[in-house]
Image (cartoon, rainbow, N blue to C red; front, side, top):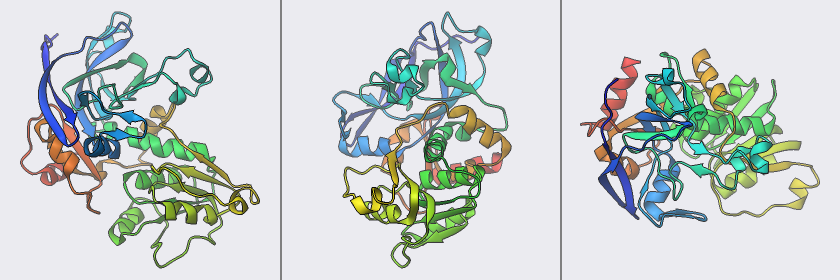
Length: 357
């Protein structure tokens, strides 16, 4: 077995709008953990928000923090209670550690654990670094047909799966999704895989609408020129975080319909007539539970495709560039490679990776 280095490189958020490359000790795995050499890390909107604002709601960055929670890699060492045969296995990581003993964990709702330690959520470090540790059963092995990038994107894919599960979406139903960013597009693919007959995506940007059609949407809507309020959808999922989209989406569902809030928004007004008198169920999703095996199955079967979502690839020394990159309509997912210092052209690197798949 190759000896592990004592130190690693990590890209660290040291203050609002400030990233520094540091040398840190390689973390030793606890008895129930595995040590993973990180291969690919997706850039999430929450990473950008922490970089730009230093907080998300009650989560405040008050000490240096490693961002990044969408990741894949290879197990290079295991704790004393873990089967050593796992060394060398490629894995996708569910980036959270629950207490496993509270009422929520015991009921299977470990995403609501009050003592949750989630990657890149203060004060827990994330994966913009060369090595990380995670509990053995939250490192899911992936077959060769699933790329490192796709394995990392099982995390945002899990957000779409959790939304579909929460909605109770059934075969033959209609779903409206607001927002054709990565989460909206992934949710659209999941909805088709779950048997939705009509997958409608609304977005202000025409290019994003065209992308949604190429990823499984059966119809797209420009909310500036077409109302969604008479759709009679069974399910509405907000992946935009835009209050007008949410209010319109609530009106788009039929009586007894499901409204699932995924996008980040502080508050919005609710109409009693729209909710109570039509028995519309409005709820949110917070992360996910037990979704990685489903995500893996969807990718293996080809029901969901994520590699082509990767539009830019950066090295570890370019994390700040990845966080500051313009969120243009043709930019969907940005990936950081912790094992690479720099790439000459992030978009060309992404295209080259796609051709190699």
